[in-house]
Length: 304
Image 1 (cartoon, rainbow, N blue to C red):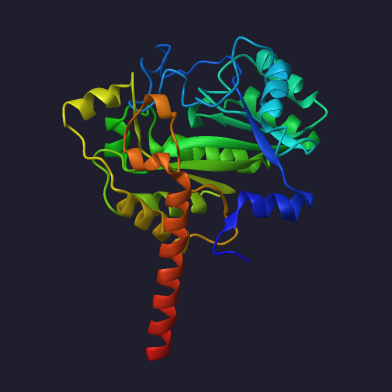
Image 2 (image 1 turned 60 degrees about the vertical axis):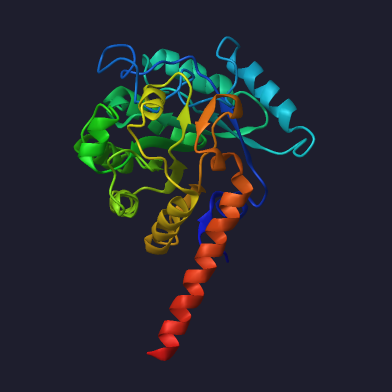
């Protein structure tokens, strides 16, 4: 047993084998971009809707899956995959359109489930009914981009909804028996040291099945880029990020599935922090800090 319950651990326990995700672009937009709520999106969101590694939105879902599988073919030639609708808001369309996209993904013989990233304010009753239907016949989880429970920070990065909207969405998803994952973003402008751990614990109280931890990074062609170039924001150091991640892991229930420990942007568009390019080093640093704190706590217990 590791120091936290990873998604790979969950897949091994649930399916008995290695499972990969293939990232897809469903061709959707976002109410925080098209004017319904705002324009331009969250200040850190790229032109690809935080889906730099997703498929080509100009191609059919089935074709995107085929192309993603080809990229995985050397290390994963025959296994099953989760179809991950990643970028923008993947429940932001009429139900017929959503059904068509999801069903096309499920029609692929290697797809055994769906992961759907969306906003808490895009889960109306019709959408929830469709998700409940899908949940009855396939493995499904929903991903909610909360980022933080600090309302001042959320307003600064233009999230476009209050914390109560997330809370209500969690309640509705639980009522329909649908698993959901909560995204947490560390290093946001104006955040407090404890915001990350408080956000994780709040998500746990709301019934989240999983957590995805991201590091704020600055990409070209975002509003955040202008703040960075004008020296209006502080860039998070790797050591700061690592300590925040470990504090989250220390306080969460082991039953919460950890889907991600850090984020990595596209190399060509990344401005800062450059240490995020070295993902393996970051993950090793997290494991080292976890072990260090574990040994420290054991020593303290013995002395007491």
